[in-house]
Image (cartoon, rainbow over the protein chains, first blue to last red):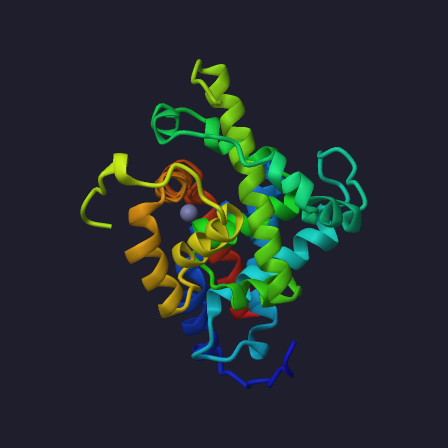
Length: 194
Length: 91
Ligand SMILES: [Zn+2]
């Protein structure tokens, strides 16, 4: 991360920043918290912690920079430090292992399922939401940041503290995994996947 | 992508499926170069059936994600956060 330049905001300025720059992102932030924790109560706590932290560290936020990315980074760090350990998900496979596994060409070839648009159009329930939630949290995260929130790769790299190349490859794997899940649903709905 | 290409005259197989999928995702993510966009959208997509299908699939998945995977913050939570910050300010 680049060096943080500390500001000295007045109380009034702080309040303005909070209301005008931080609060407008609260729905996106809640959704991120919810998709990370997969639990409404944990999401509430995580969101509240994040906003209180954002307020406490407001002097390290520079006006005119991307407030949404700044907030997302705080939320993601809080999640890793405080929630990931006690989350209800099954214990994680070694992360490096996962990344190496999904980076191999073999896996890539296996998982390019023939999913059809027509099948997707019939997924009017929770299929896509369940498919997204079922992905490993690191894969879920990049899809949320990119496809739901529209962050650029460079912003994602900063939020996640990983190189841009990793953002790209992780996104690619994540989307393949999501498609694989969706084609399982499509199959169960009676769609042919050849 | 305005006119639907003549499907019978399109290639049924793509020799660069993996690379094409990567470029197509770059385009949809707004991260592709102008050359990549021109080549892929104006030339390749018109003649390559698997990529044409993939393009529409990727678009459909993104739309589905956006409509089905966004939960709004409960209003009482939003109010609570505001209240806590105001208390903080008063201190
Ligand atoms: Zn192609």
